[in-house]
Length: 233
Image (cartoon, rainbow, N blue to C red; front, side):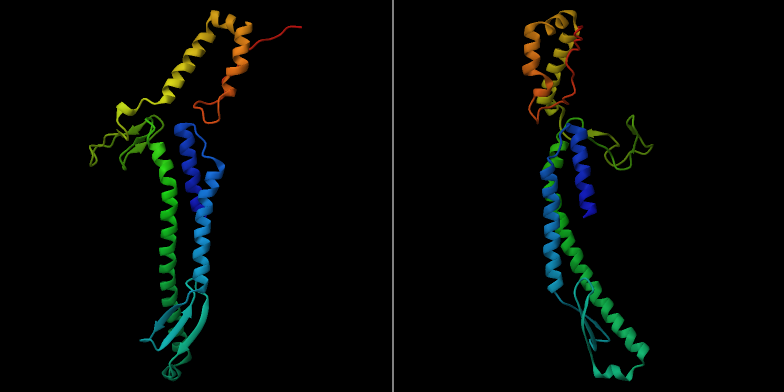
C-alpha cells in the first residue's frame, strides 16, 4: 500500500506544482480505498484457494495457499525407501513448487490491482499534461534547475524538448485571469489607485471582491494582501 500511496502523493504534488490545484482529500483517499478493497478481496480468495506443488513425478504432493500456508502433504509409499534427508528434500522441493505457483497467482492479482489504480489516476495525469508549462524531455537527458543539458549524441527524436500540446492551445483561461490580476495590481500600485483604494468605493469593492472571497477552485493563490492602511488614533 505504501507504493500506491507514494504514487498518489506524487500525482497530487504534480497537480499542485503545475496547476496550483489541490486534489480533494476525499478523492485521494477514495483512490487508495479502491486499491485496498481490491487487495482485500483477492486476499480473501487466496486464503480459500489451494495450490498443489509436486516433486519426483508427482509422488510427493504438497497443498498450500498461494501465500505459502501449508495445508496437507500427500506422499507415495515408495518414498519410505528413501533416507530421511532425501524425504525432507523432496517435501521441500514440492513446497517450493507450490509457493512458486502461488507467487505467480499473487503477482497476477497485484498487476490487475495496479492496472485499475492507473486507470483511476489517468484522467488526473492527462489533466496535468494539458498544462502548457508541462514539457516532456528525452529519457537520457540530464535535468537541472536551469533546464535540460543536451547530450553530445542526439537521441532518437533528435534530442529536442517538445511540448505535449500545440502552442495554439497553450493560451488558457487562467492566463486571462492572471492578466486581469496584473492589471488590478498595476492600478492599485499607481497613485490614483491608492487614493481610490482608500475611498468609500474602494473599501466597498475590497469587502466584496477581495482575493480571499474568490471561490475555492478559482485560479491563483489567495495570498494577495489588501492595501495597508494604518489608522492613527
